[in-house]
Image (tube, rainbow, N blue to C red; front, side, top):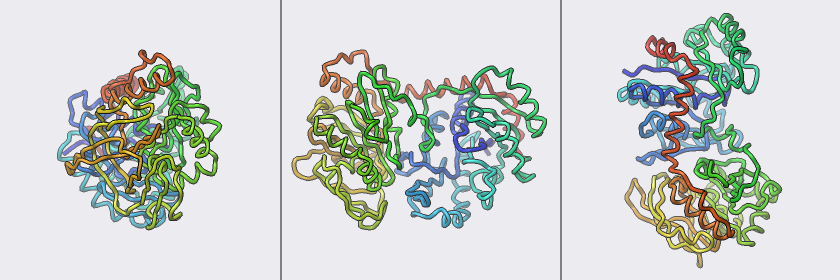
Length: 503
């Protein structure tokens, strides 16, 4: 059976996902078959597997680092928040239902058999499983019936590496305080401590490391630096939302709605010289972009009403009237229509509302969810992006709305469902307004390059030095850089010793 090791953190955003991905890459490089596992993930960034099942993107990223295809067994439970006190509960890739936090807390222990079935399937196929916890194992109000931190470590017999974030301050109190709040049997499972996101001269930190080991009785197995690695991160705490607001030669504004999901769709636009990708929350931040992107959302109607109330909708409508490019994906695409109806309160309790009216179409939210991977091509396009015709695309659909096009609007793409094999039109276009249900529609290098050329021509500027990237190849280089950085700063000999000893 597979050996196991688990990364837990003193808090959310301590760097668990990235460290787990780095260990997956290191173990792969060392010749092992390795897979990631997180029993329960709460995130709005999700992914559809080849067999049409939904899972969190963090485990997809870790699977890519491990050099394997992501499967739903790597993340058997996904919670997608619909509001501040409730989430859609997805088990083994399919929607179980929507529950309040209290109801889910009372119910979750019943999911242990599904969690362990998924874990055992991975055990049969891999040499090493790198598990990831969630939040902190010392949340004393959540410790009862835990299924994702120490409870999962015990079920998987996984030794734990506890990670603290020095960049946010108080890392010694984080690590010591967490260990002190653990039960004795839980403390015995923690086999190593990691100080993460360190910047500066490590020798200044050494006395603190020595005291940390003395007070905890647990060895520090590494001080990991603040690595500038471009890989996908968890949605709610991503630093991408707080990036530079400087405007590039070509400027793209992504509307950061309260329930934004799958913002990873826009990652291929990052790191292109001369292109700025900005996440904006107000009309003042919008400035004068060349293209406005409306992202996916877990609550389309409520997020549209948020835009309506804070003036962003009016600003976007004004710019669309001036000929600016507006591109919506999934929920953002639905917002562009004339009406949005939710008769069964699938996402919202507002019933039917007017959309932005930029695309002649209507959307009705259904209780069934479309989940599939797709590939296809852009159809004949009009407006600024009239050079996209026949450019290939691939990605996935994940939505609960059914959209009907009206007169004068044509589909944007023709796609083939990879699960059913059915070919169908997708999306809509009208003037300089475009929309699609396909997530990852920009992942192919030629899609971005073609759009860049079109925008450059419309502005009368030379974009020949701007090029898209092979996004998959780019991510491979980042995983290797991550592994190199961790090998240099972690005691991998000690980590292998902990892995082999187990608990």
